[in-house]
Structures are given as C-alpha cells and as structure tokens.
Image (tube, rainbow, N blue to C red):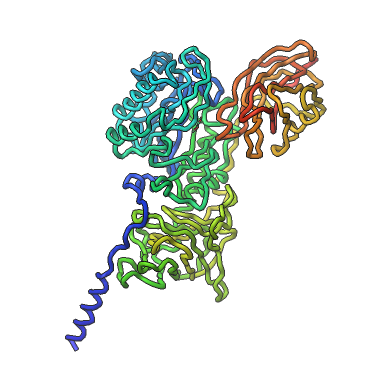
Amino acid sequence: MYKKYLLTLGCLMGTLSAATEPAPYGVLPTEQQVNWLRMEWYAFVHLGLNTYTNREWGYGDESPRLFNPNDFDAEAIVRTFKGAGMNGMIYTAKHHDGFCTWPTLSTTHNITQSPWKSGRGDVVREFANACQKYDFPFGTYLSPWDRNCAEYGRKGYLDVYYKQIEELLTQYGPIFEIWFDGAMGGDGYYGGARQKRNIGQADTYYNYEQVVKNIRRLQPDCIIWGAAKRGDVMWGGSEMGFVKYPLWNVQNNKWISLEGDTPINGRGWFWHPGQAGHVKSPEHLMHVYMASVGRGANLILNLAPNRNGRLDAADVASLEAFGRMRSRLLAKDYALNATVEASQVRGNDARFAGQALTDGDIESYWCPEDGNTTPSAEIILPEPTTFDVIRLREQIRLGQRVEAFRVEAMVDSKWQTIVEAGQPGQVESKFNLRGGKGHTIGNQVMRWLSRPVTTDRLRLTITRAKACPCISEFSLLRMPSAEEARPVTGDDSAEKPLSSRGWTYSGFAAEKAPLAFDGNPDTMWHIGRTPSHFVINMQQPAMVSGISYLPRQDGKTQGMTSRYRIELSMDGTNWQNVAEGEFGNLRANPVEQFVTFKPQKARYVRFFSTAALDGVGSSVAEMKIYGRPASN
Ligand code: FUL
C-alpha cells in the first residue's frame, strides 16, 4: 500500500515537473520593450518657441529672445504627472523650428540666446533633475527636421544632429525613450535661404541604421521611437491617440510596439492663448486610453506649459480627473483569486494551470499542450459579480500568439456570449469601443462591454492562435461612472466667435462659403483651385482679432488649405493684410487651428487659401471669426 502510494506520488511528481515551457513563438520583444509596455502611459511636454508664437510648427526664423518661461517649475510639472498616475515624461528638447532648449554646442540657435535666466537656463536639465528626484522616467524628443539649420538637407546637418543626440544621451542621465519624428514638411528658413528642401528617404539621409547603433552604445535601455521603423516603437497612426485593433506587435519580422499620441488640449501640441475652453474631457481621455492601452499599445498624452512655463489649470483638472478614473478602473480586479478550470493544462503541470489567470501575477501563465490552439477555461467567482471591462494578457516574452477569443457568461443558467470572437479581416473603428470583439491580446487587451454583466461563472475560449496560447491574466474590472470625473470648467479669456447670422459671402465658390460657417464639420467650402479666396460681409463692423480654421474632415488631404492670408476691410474695397502663414501638421492632426492678430475694426474679412496639400484646391470645413461687435 505504502509502496503503491509512493509510486503514485512519484508518477504525479513526475508529471508535475515533466512539462517544459512552450517554445517561444516568432519574434520576441526585448526586455526593454517588455518593460516599456508595462509603463502604459506617460506625458508628452511641448514647450519651445511655438509657445510664444501661437504656432504648431515654427518656420525656423523665430527669435530666441521670445523664449522666457519665467515661472517654469519642472518639479511642479513632474509632481502633477506623477500624482495623476503617469509613469514618465518626454520633453521636446528641439522641435521642427530647430530651437534647442538646452545649451547645445551644435548650434547657436539655442537657449543661451534667450533672456530666460539671462541665457543660463537649461530646460532639459531641469526636467531631467526633477524626474530623477521623483524617480520618474525621463525621455526626449529631438526633431530630425530642422527648419533653422542652414545645412539641413545636406551632409553638414548630420554632424549637427548627431552631436545633439550625443549631448542629450550623455549629459542628462538615463533617457527611457527618444523620439525621431517622421515629419519633414519641406520648406523652412534654413539659415536665411527660405527654401523647400527635399531629403529623399529619411532612413538614408539621417542614416538611422547608424543612429540606432550609436544610441544602443550610449544608452542600451533607451527605447527608440520611429527612426524609419528601425526603432523599438512606432506611431499609433493618428494624433487622436487611438491605435488600430487588432494589434500585432510584429512588423516585417521585427517586434515593434505602438504608441498612441494625443494632446490633452484640442488646440494642439503647444500652448495657445485661450485654450482653456478646448481641453478634452476626462471621459474623452478614457476613450483614448481604452483605444490605445486597451488595445495593447502605450499612450503618450501631451500637456503644454504656457508662456510662464506653467501647466494650465484646466488641462491639469482634466488630467487629474482622468487619472482618478483610471485608478478607480484598475483598483479592483473582481476575478482575483477566482477558481479556474481549464480544458487542458500543459503536462498537467501546476506551473501552467488555469489558476495562473487569476493569481494577480502577470508573469505566470496558463498554457495547454503544443498544437492546442483553441483551449478554454472557466472562471468561477465566489459570488455573482457585476463588471463591464474584461482585461486579458498574454505572456509576451514567449511571443504574441492569440488571434481571436470569446468570452461567455453564465446568465440565467445559460451561456451568453459577452465578447464575440473576432473574425479575420475585421478592424475595430476608432472610438466605438463598447461591445468590441475579441481579436489580439498581446501585452494586454481591455474589452469594454456594451452594458454591465452580472454573473458568477465565465468561460474564456481562445478561438484562433498561431501557437498554443500562453495567457497570463484574466481580469474583471468596473468602469467608474462619469460623475467620477468632475466637469472641467474652463476660464476661457479669449475673444468669443462672432455670430455668423446675416453674413453674406462673395469670391470663389461663394455659394459654398456658408458651409464653412454652418457649424457642421462634414460640409465645407471647397474649390479646385489654389490660390483662391472668399469674402465675408459681416454687415456690421467688429473689432476682429482672429479666425479659427477647421480643415476638411472627410479623411482626404487633397486640396486641404495649408497656407493662408487674411485681409480686413471696412468698405470692401481697401484691404489690409493682417496675417499670413502656415497651418502646420495637418496631415497627422487635422484639428481646428487659430490665427490671432491685433484687433482691428472691420466689416469685411477676406480669407485667402494660398497653398494646399496634395494638389490643387482650397477648402475650409469650418471657420469662425473672433472679436467683439463695434459701433459703426
Ligand atoms: C508630430 C509633429 O509634427 C507635431 O508637431 C508634434 O510634435 C507631434 C507629437 O509629432 O509629428
């Protein structure tokens, strides 16, 4: 008897320890990429000369004398981010205008020429030190496109640029991520040449292969964003923050994760006057979070310091409210420690048992035998529980495997599908997240149900996988109610838009001009020629101080007005040119842009579209004229 018992125990132990780890599948993430994915979200900070010029893209000829964030407090900013639950920050050390916000030796177009701290300031240093003090990862954005440098587009610029990379990576401590933006619009100041410069293939011109090697040498743990897909991470594909789903981390035989990016303020990446009324609501930010982190990517959320170097109260209020919503969402996993019965366990080995799904350890995982790509597991809760978000994780150290899954809940003694299995070829829409299907899992996926479900028994079925799935987590969460996020009240001090009632229009395609003032972003003024213009007769004079322009919103860029001139007149005959310039970054972020000028009395406004994207044409989806009524 005793012998038999020993034999059984021996066999059991034999089987218990017999199973080997599944072989890794496909391309694997580096340790750095795994750690990076676990950061989930962090801040972007755009502060530079554009902060002072009300622009999104500087041309490169802005005077460094404009830069003076006299109340800048890096520690206060870092404390705000950390307090909201963010896990790091990335600062734009240099944007496309070429102005370096640290005392670089690579160019004189830098912070030493500014009046701030009598030319002895260093924004990068202050952020790096503050991050170090608060144990907060620090990263940097260094625009490859440089509209100031005379050598841009030639070989000479590369020495400048490489020097800048080296300075940032050797003088400021650990950099967790460095951004190599893909934007290169062509024209610029370029040391006074004021030309269009074509660099051909960015990968070849910048020699990203070498750049990546240099960075690995200087800071092996630094995550590289972009760099013509030679880096570790790439753009999520929109500047609204959402990324595509299903989401595969493997592209062209390389592990590349995605990062969703968006500014918290609808006015853009840099600070703009009167932006307080444009901050995105905490609920909106939750959608962005679910459409980035919830799809298996990371999220970088921008907050732009104002001209004093401080974050705007309205931006901070929304960030903090969203931060509270997020911590509430993640605070309690209702499936934690639930019993799990799996359809199959690899070698019946406790190491690979279903229990790993609910043990709160994201390294342990449930795994069936090799070749079984459709296992299932029942999750049994101690009591009926209500939830509306389901989170799953794969053990990505062994590769990304799952293509589709289904979740059912036992309701009224019947299995009801609450997350339908995704079918090949389906793509989830941008923000329509409720009721989404189960496709890829990767580092994590969160599925937000169309309505809360109450049950004490669930079933997870993997319906398609590239190899036996290794699932490390199954969580049930509850989305906090909207009240959780307090409404943001902006103290918008900017001039208000004038009412367009009674206005008449002339000029090109004048019959379509009202469509730019009808409050409907889906209709527009457009004509197949550039330059082109229309005239607004406001009937009454007003002190006009600016306009806003919303580019076409139909997803097309052809004929999207990208340069403008604005003229004002009292009589419709004598015109005065009050502003001209560029609407920057339209392709990636076609949001409303603002042009402000010295208030001037006018009855007529003439808007010229002087250049457009992708061929001939002019268009305006929506326009507003800002100012206040004036007497005749
Ligand atoms: C883009 C830039 O062109 C924008 O100005 C902004 O910096 C954004 C984060 O990246 O490519």
